[in-house]
Image (cartoon, rainbow, N blue to C red; front, side, top):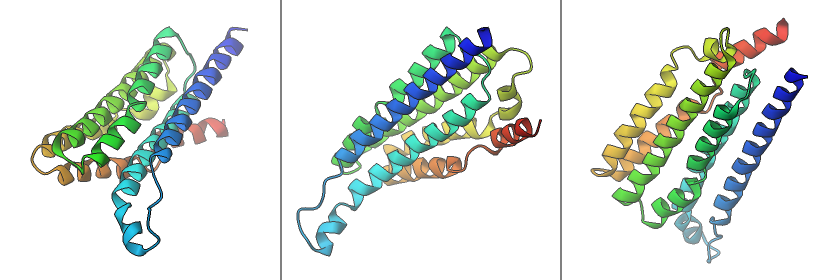
Length: 202
C-alpha cells in the first residue's frame, strides 16, 4: 500500500507541475500580439517579441522535459520534495514577467540582468530539487547514479552569472549567454535516458 501511495503522490506532483508550466506558456503567448500592418515591415517589427517568447518557451520546455525524466527515476516523494518542487515553480512563474520586461525595455541592462537572475535561480532551484529527491530516495538512488557530478547543471549556473555580469556592459552579449545555455539543454539529459533505457530492459 505504501508504494501505491508514493506513486500517487508522484503522479500528483507531476500533473500539478505540468499544469503550471502549461499555464505559463499560455500567459506568454498572449503577449505576442499580431502586427498592426499587413506588410513585411510590420512582420519584421515583431521579431524581438517573437524571439523573447521563443527563448522563454524553450526554457520552459526544457524544464518540463527534464522534470519529467527526473521524476521517472524518482522512487520516493516526501514533504521536502514537494516544497522543493514548489520552489522551482515559483521561479518559473516569473518567466512571463521578466520576458515582458526585457522585451518591453528594448533589452536594456537591468531587465536583461533580472531575466538572467531568474534563469539562474530557476536553475539553482532545479538542482536543489534534484538533490532533495536523491536524499529522499536514499541509498541506491537511480537519479544520483544518472546525474553523477552534474557538470552541465553547474556549468549552466556559471554561464548565467557571466550573462548577468555582461548585461551591465553589453546586454545582447548577456542574451547570447542565455541562448547558449538553452542550446546545451535542448536534448534531454543522456545520462537519465541511459538509466531509463537500462531499467526498461530489466
